[in-house]
Length: 125
Image 1 (cartoon, rainbow, N blue to C red):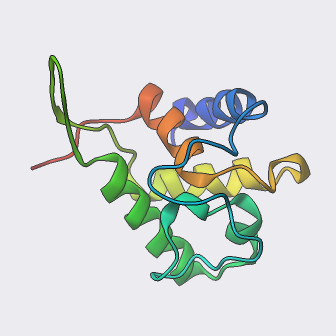
Image 2: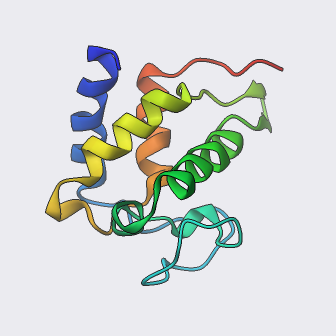
Image 3: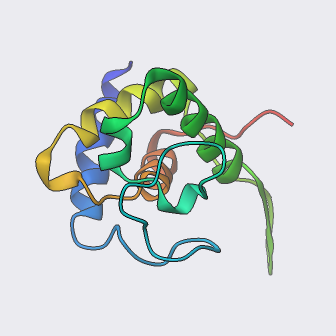
């Protein structure tokens, strides 16, 4: 993982410390104990679930968050795709950000979005 992405982990965690729990895209508030499985909406994935999940669940979560974040962006004066992180970098980023005890309720898609905004790249079409 690059030093740049590691630096982003700290910055994103600091940004989220005051507000990573609300404003989820199309889903209700986080569900305590929700698994990082394919049936759970990505908007409820928290660091607590990340820590409890296995490698396969974590990899699937990274892929689902990447697909959401790198999706089509449209609107007044905007067209394109969102920025994403390399999957390995995102995985390592979540490992580092979620190891902090205070991060248990941080929403993964928000952490990812902040980090991708700084260190991400436009996805391939």
